[in-house]
Length: 400
Image 1 (cartoon, one colour):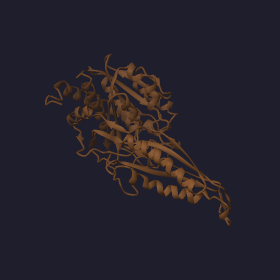
Image 2: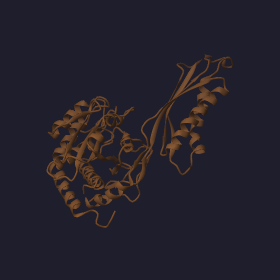
Image 3: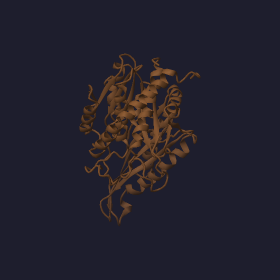
Image 4: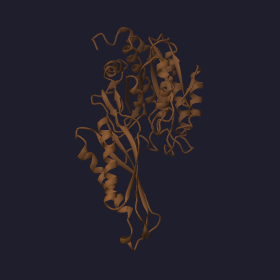
């Protein structure tokens, strides 16, 4: 990027977006409260989509079942802003008078993201945009299979000449007041696995005439945690987590089978392939050595999320010109986000917007917690960051 960037026109557009976002901010806060108080989990988000499309008062085209998209600005090349629609199956504990009471909750900040994208779209209606601005409200981010691949299958990016896709996510592990960008990998690939050990059950008093699947499964569970440390380059981020173990039905019966479920998280595709193969081999051989069998099922999830170099280089000065502060050390996480699928087609950038929660303790209130609640001021910060992302994308498209 030359010293002439941001250009005079880019700085003018930042001022116009800032004024427009500030003008609609009271409405955005009210919209966020309405979304937050009536959330819907993945696949059931239609009422949220209807609420948003009505508030936009502009043409909205359905996509991926319960999602929709809308466009502002000129024909030709465009930049997309993506927001998630879905909530989580969590019972809210914030104590707000606008808290959810239906057993679902926007405990990941998606309500903030939706209101922020809405703010940018509304502000853009009064601006002479250099490129098209696409708002994609995507369903089922928290699900597997997720909604982003279904958006891509429609050919939307090609049909609307989308040159880049911009995302922003609130993040309590980034200090309040900071925006983290970062070049390259910022989120991991996440792949689920099931392992079922089949042995031969019987009376608990006669283990010698059984093939007990429980200790076999225990050995596999313990060994899985060692795979990363002995197979993966220690400079590469990767992990295996076990989330569920289940066996038997009562005290004195050795069961016929036992099962566990977990997640493999990797930042490098070669590590992903290796851990898939070695997890399967380890489980099957461990079971076989003790007379049992292991059925291993791997479900590929979202790929790793990598921020495009050119987008980040264009974006960081725009964030600073917007009055935002870019983190010196990029936030990188083995969390996953299906936003990564867009990066298989066009350049992308995911920004992490700090919400300042104390994190890293055993009792932190972070993402997916029943008391996680970004402040209303975060809507403005996310909206300004997304507007800067749009201008960076327009610059890379040669429109600015």
